[in-house]
Structure formats: structure tokens, C-alpha cells
Image (cartoon, rainbow, N blue to C red; front, side):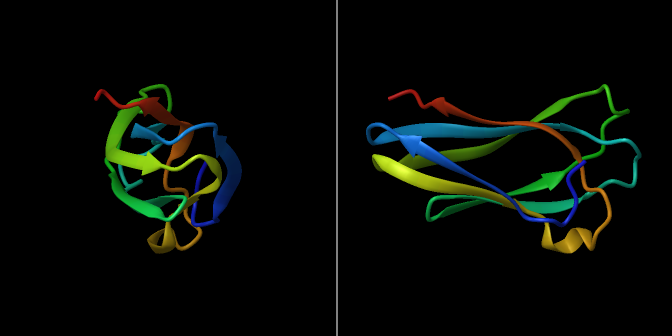
Length: 100
């Protein structure tokens, strides 16, 4: 369960590339709503959690497109408005090569 804690990980791009970014999540209750920020390198994408019908009902949120240079970068997910309450059950953050 992801709440207001900052989640962070290091990554590496072998070459400059464009990516589409999405998040897969579910919620346990209909009151699990709120906003979050995903910072990838120096770019920030914002999203909102829409409640799902239960923990097994996964939803994909498309956040947009980013361009990354070659090299290491940090990926950080935060939810400053969650105030310690569970925001979502996070399954994955997906960076897929963007079509040209």
C-alpha cells in the first residue's frame, strides 16, 4: 500500500529515449482518492487516484510522455496530500518506449 511516504529508486537509460509513463494500481475502499506526483529525473508527472471496485480490480493510469537522456536517473513517487493514509495499492510503474 502506498501512502504519503516517498518511494524512490535509481534507474539507468543506456541511450536517450522517449517513454510513455503509466501506473497500475487498485484501491481497497471507495474513499481512497487523492493526488500523487511521479518525478522521473528532472520531469514531474501528476496523477489522481480514482477508486477501483476492490483490491483485485487493477486500473492503469496513463501519465504522459517523457524524454530521458542517457545515464542514471531517480524515480520518486510521492503523495503529499495523503497525510499517512493509504492512497493506493501500487503494482507497477511502467516506462514503455514511445512511438516516434
